[in-house]
Amino acid sequence: MKLMETGVLYNPQSGKVSGKNVSKSSRQLKHMEGYYEDTEAFRSMDPETPVYEVLMHAQEEGNEGGLLFGTSYLFPGKVGNEYFMTKGHFHEIKNRAEYYWGIQGEGALVLMDEKGEAKVEKVTQGSLHYIPGHIAHRLVNTSDSMLVVGACWPSDAGHDYGTIEENGFSVRVKEEDGKPVVK
Amino acid sequence: MKLMETGVLYNPQSGKVSGKNVSKSSRQLKHMEGYYEDTEAFRSMDPETPVYEVLMHAQEEGNEGGLLFGTSYLFPGKVGNEYFMTKGHFHEIKNRAEYYWGIQGEGALVLMDEKGEAKVEKVTQGSLHYIPGHIAHRLVNTSDSMLVVGACWPSDAGHDYGTIEENGFSVRVKEEDGKPVVK
Image 1 (tube, rainbow over the protein chains, first blue to last red):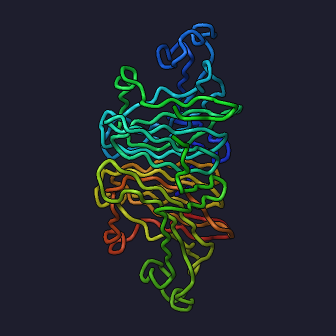
Image 2: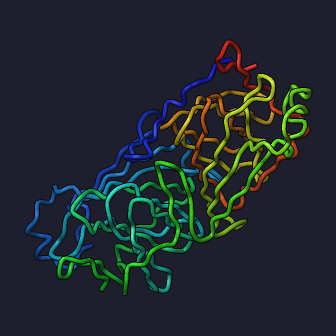
Image 3: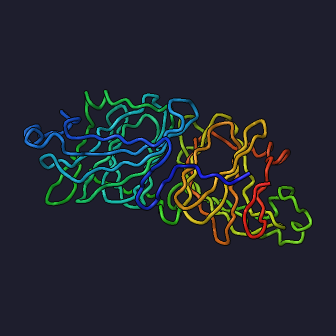
């Protein structure tokens, strides 16, 4: 019997996930209509501007007990004075948790419970973030370079984007005097 | 509202997990009586010889939907010509999966299903390993330096060490002519 290669690579330094069962998804500004407060600034920008990309390894998707693994790349940028961010979501199966870990860049992780109570964690290279079940989560890039964040979450967690699309988060992360502030 | 530190650090380069809710466990040779084939060689060695250590972050343990995160450090060494290895286990909740990723060193990941069918994956810096449910898993250090492997798994997975302690794995990884071979 031989030692076999898995055919899947994960570079801990860059976060790159590649090989078998790896897919990539991309979000541009056009996918984020209504998410940013400054709608005038939003409309003045190129709708094809990339906001984030996700590399995901999925050997089993949807089944109970399984896991998924991936890396998010959030581009630097602002709409008005509001930093580029991911859409953010609850999990469809509410009690499913998720781990995030900061690989490159600086940012914020906005967390909000079902009552709208929010807190914001600082994401840096080397920070580990545990997102318990029942908590909506959104990444924000507060720096001038790419924010790279690793993630692992249950295969059956699913994404409930609708609740956030309708009601938003209770806080926004904006630039004020060159620094990130939570509003 | 301020950006808060999580108080937990994960260094993607070294695998070190530190801070709040992080614990460390250690296994020495004395904990692994009966695991290695060459019992004579085993008895001739110092029972306090370290075999592996695990750093684990656990914000929620035992609950459905939660996750755990950690790093395993497997020391280099052999008992006779059999490489140092972890005990290996099935999960108590059988269908729980796990992710492993190679951070430093070279080794092998022995996987075995409930019928005793085994396969062995090569672990290197940058390899990603998906361990589906119902699959026993054991790490083996086939190199002269520390094998460092990151991991994420469900909070309620639990460890069934007993099945392996009784029946072992159907294969062993040994050194032959200076190279790892699966027997």
